[in-house]
Amino acid sequence: MDGSTVEEVQFESDATVIIFTVLSTLLCAISVLTNSLTTIIVIYLPKQTPFSKLFVNLAICDILGTFAIYIGDGFYRAGIHWNLLSLERLNSIFIVAGICFNLLFLTSTVTLLVFAIMRFIAIKKPHLFKLYFASSKKILIYICLCWIISTCVAFPSIICEYTAKEKCGGIHKQSQNSSNFFNTTFQIEDNLTNFLIEDNLTNLQINDVTINNITDEQQQSCPTEAAYVVCYQWKYSWAVGKGLILIIIVLLYIYVSRDLFKRCGSFRDEDCAMRNRRNDQHAFITIVILIVTMVLLGVPYIIVKVYRRAVFSQTTIAVYHHFITYFPYINFILDPLVYSIRSPDIYAKYKSVIDQISCKQRNQRTVQNAYEIVSGTHKGNVPIATELRQVNSL
Figure 1 (cartoon, helix red, strand yellow):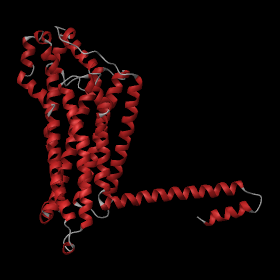
Figure 2 (cartoon, one colour; figure 1 turned 45 degrees about the vertical axis):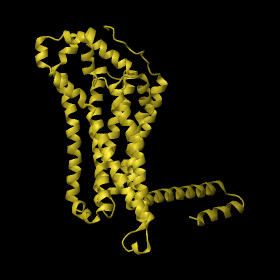
Figure 3 (tube, one colour; figure 1 turned 30 degrees about the vertical axis):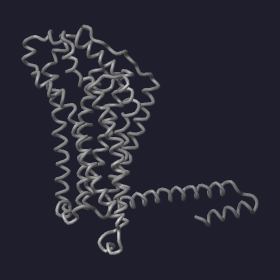
Figure 4 (tube, one colour; figure 1 turned 180 degrees about the vertical axis):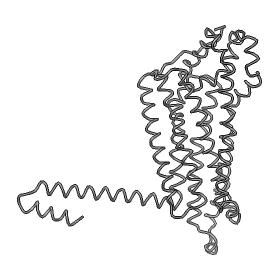
């Protein structure tokens, strides 16, 4: 291909794809279950707080984001490997799922930023908390802003993917021996790692034969070179936005945690009327957990995702496929566990539900044991005495 070097193709085995599909399905189910349970519990809490609506919004984003990453990554990878659908349909599914995932992932992150700001104001400037967060209407406005900001970042990718594809559809049809071959080669080389359509610009830039085969009429109808550059670079915007928001959140939590740590360490008897040491320690531990989970899950995922799109490497692809690809699921699972269980009201409701379920299970086992003794004893006095003890214990 005009002297260009191509890295050796590495196909996945059936066992690898099966393991990936099973793990993705399991993590998807856990994420949907935990977030759905959290949503129901928060909605039916007797006392609604300013955090309640944000919890629901976060859980909805996590549920939809889980489905998006499962379809765009899990189903797409399995579909390519076993030829479940045509390549064109799978590419379309991947594009739509990728756009939805970027939108929902960013919305979830912006919602976490609102949480961080609320915690910051509640701890550093408690006299301003009611002014900004006590009203339900203001909370709804903040939620709408979360979606608007995320949509502004994700919407250009829709224009870049579909508008350019419709106007320049003739490029791929007239140059099947060059562009399609190079595009297909890139698809195989990348071991089908979910950036087939996104790299069309790179294919066009590298393969001079494709560009030379474009007619004057097609050049006029296609987007300009500047538009291609903008669209090509815009796919990194989600990572920049996500990374910037994570940095702000971590800095806010570090700043607040330092204050809480000082307050916990310098607690005096005369401060008891103004501060609650136990609440400060609880908030400090919660913030430390949040910082650790965000850094461990968010930073590696963003770095590998961006590097994988910028530089083709089988090692990076393998790391992403076997390790990093599960990070979004883990992030979506930890969101309700950390944010909900660390909240006293929601934790109490969780504990109540778990206690009720375990109590019912114990009662069912006790009744089942009593039934087995009754049905299996009809002779002698010892079994009858055992039967009476079982019934009396109910």
